[in-house]
Length: 216
Image 1 (cartoon, helix red, strand yellow):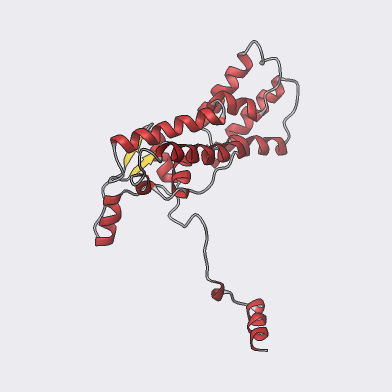
Image 2 (image 1 turned 30 degrees about the vertical axis):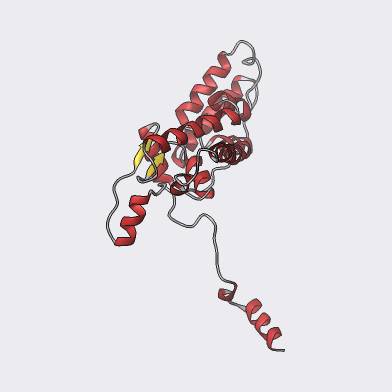
């Protein structure tokens, strides 16, 4: 969801809460929003609908975890689905071309693991360990309901070489749901995911004091 969906989402949470004889405070709605904002608004609406129709659990007011489980299964399920997309994309598309998945977490996790092209250097013997590392990292983010920054595109060898030569690269191959992959691209950032700065770049009184101590 985007910030533009907040009002409609808040109304939805308020209506569901009222259905179960309660009132939703602004603070409660904020918690709901933080837990579910990574999902599409229509998917959240459908999950609410399925919950109230569920003969086993529909008599109880839902919690964010109930909807997350309903929309994506367990974190293990989500990680296995995500890895299956990565594995197939690598074998069908390869690391020569740039790719954009329909899941932003895939971009984040693969970047942390060295990037898209790094996968091409792995051997079949290493592959099970690569898969396990991916699943553990992916599940960690899912369990914490984190939406970290990620690159819009996973750069392939061809684009990297073209960039070095000053040429424009080809459009990336979209993996999975095409419209979702385009949204992932639009929501990415070109900024470094981990900020790094030389200690020598420090300025101000603290840095001046450190220099004075060093000369004392």
